[in-house]
Image (cartoon, rainbow, N blue to C red; front, top):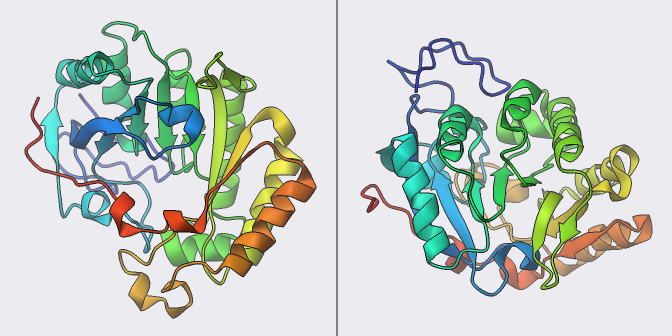
Length: 294
């Protein structure tokens, strides 16, 4: 890949990623820390066989509570792959029975991923599983190659976005990005087995002590997108990364917090899913590695 003045993500850091790491802590070549079947996504993504997840290292956000901080912050750098090798990983997962190819944290490697996808059209849906903090211009380049978008919508309050993710423009950027995702996919389409074939699912991770933010996010989704996307309300938060430095989020959710947010989802009559509190378990964080077998 050739990224001389990076504007792939909304940071527009302008770094020559051929010779140095951008804000995302990575160069131009995609780096993968895990490629395996994954059973812990939404039921319509994981199905019975699992989702073919490819976890990329680095990140364009700086979430202090990141569950995957070992790969997002560079503690584990993963294995550098060419577009041809990346396409080979996709095919290997499909041969193992993956219902889809699930690109986890792909934002900063979008050019390399696009090149890999263009080698040959895959026979299963491609899932773009991201923080939601995306450049609309980059998303437009992916049109026709992504079947399912799975973005986060973390914050309605940009003060929280700055405090926890160092992204003071998160709300506006993410709202515009999700609008573009929905424009590309249209409404959700499922097959006879309940697997998602095309569409957008908006994820929201409820943060402890911040029910008000979660309610504001759900109301924003209702106002901006209505039933054109599904919503996945996530209760899996565990204190990770640097959460211990922020006492208000240095704990798991309470049932009362989950119930309050879930009630708003129900009252708004939005389509989607609600995770159980039992999902807040370190056991669900997958293992990562630096020496991926290609």
